[in-house]
Structure formats: structure tokens, C-alpha cells
Image 1 (cartoon, rainbow, N blue to C red):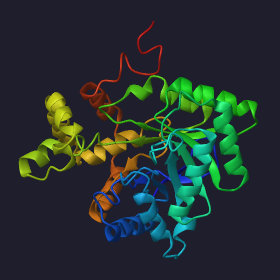
Image 2: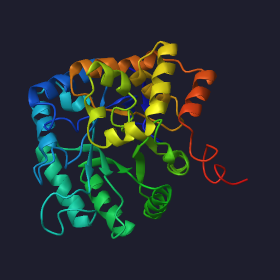
Image 3: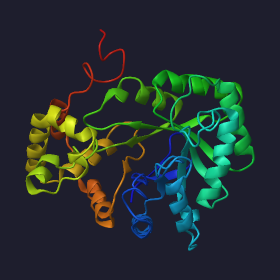
Image 4: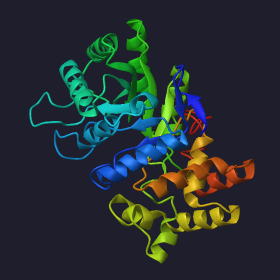
Length: 328
């Protein structure tokens, strides 16, 4: 396994992050335990979850599964860099969601209880709150850090200017501020290259891309459709996206075949090659899917291959950061 520092911190994280959103809804507890055990065998130490995962209001079902895995002992908790999130709706009352100081502190306590741990390594804001001032947010986070319940703070789904505003407010308080941004980023969705990634690099945040395969579309969706293997790419938002991008996906799968690699491996390898990216999030539903993700480290994309991928999946505008992407 390859490791990198998370943003400007001294924290070492694996270059693949184990996403746990499937634990509970799609993957039962024994299989979830097996996936987490195998992840450690592979050296994957960054595990990502959220208090809303499990998708039963207020239950935190996925965090509870992870907590029961930690409770088995064997050094599981000490080996893992645990990332979870706060923001989502956890109850029907007004203060059971968002980023008020009250909700941040209460949600952290609840996550710690479900996860059966004393601390969260990376506590991420699942979405920006336009109603809550940064002074309030950072005061709550400082309290949790001072208590040893949170070690680092991250963001998710922030715009570039949100990152800038957050860091300015943190600096005024002599607080470390954000160290990571979790955002959607893949060959089909490259908007973050305009401002989010440049802002993250400027302020020392590591990028943790979610949906690296764009809901399965970049995992050989057309091939799987033909062989009857399709799962994620044949349901939900992926259906409309496949219809819209079919010709591009067909050309992509043909190019991957020319390179002699699976489309999944190419998509992950491309992300691993991108500036500022710390660890793409993989969301395996089985141990076999987890094992196959490591093939991405065997893929070497030369300049010619990268240029072809840019032809197939053009960046926004002329490419690169704003404003050069659209201005002289």
C-alpha cells in the first residue's frame, strides 16, 4: 500500500480510502466485518463513514456496525484513521441537523457512542451551512479538539470560496482549520478542478474524492450490461447518465481494452495521478471488489494515455484552474 500525508498535516493515510456507505443497506454485518478486516490486511488505514449512513433517520446504523467491528479488539481501532461526518438530519426537531454548535457537539457525542471509540480522527462537515457563522462552527470544533474527541477537521461538498472563508476564520483563532475536502471527482465530473482543488492546494487540504467511478459508469458499465453483470450502473441516476454518455463510455471501455486494464483500474489510477488527491474513496460491497481495487496501483498512465482521457472526458472550459479555464 502507498501512503501520503493528509494535506499539510503529519497524518499518514493510505492512498485508497475505504468507504462504508454500503454497510447495512447493501452489505450485511458479517460481510462488512470481512471487508474491513481485509482492508487492514491490504494496509488501507483510512476509513470513511457518516452519521446518516444506513439511511434510517437518527439510527446511525453504519456507524454502529463499525463500532461493533472495533469492539472485537485486535488493535482494529488503533490501526484505523477514522473519518465520519456531521450535518445531515438525525431527527425531526429543528436542531437535529446542520452545523450549529449545539448540533456539532451533540452529533459528535452520538457518533462516538455508536462507533464505540473515544476519538474521531477526521470530523468532516458533510455540507456547507449558509446559516451558521464560522465563529460558531470553529468554537464548537475547538471544544471537541480540546477535549480530545476530534483530532482533525475536514469539509465535504464545499465550494472553493467556502474553503477560503473557513481557513481565514480559523487562522484568526489560531486554529488549524480544515485539512481535507471530500468532493465528487472523477473523469466524468471535473468541476472541482476549476476552484475547489486550487483552493485546497493553496490552503493545504488533501482531496478525498467520492464517487470515483461515477456510480459505476466507469467500471465497465456497457460490458456488464451486455453480460448481465450490471448492478449500480443499471439503477438510479446512473441510468440517465449512461444514456447521456453512452458513446463516450463505449470509447472509454475500448481504450481501456487497448491499454490492457479494467476500466475501474484506469479510473482510479487517473485520480491517483491528479494533483492534490490524497485518497479516492472505494465503496466495495464484497471482499472481491475490495481486492480488485488494488490493481489501480499497477497502472501507469503516460502522457499519451492522459491526453487521450482528456479527449474522451474534456475538462471544464480549456482545462486547468479558474480563471484561465475560460479567460485569457
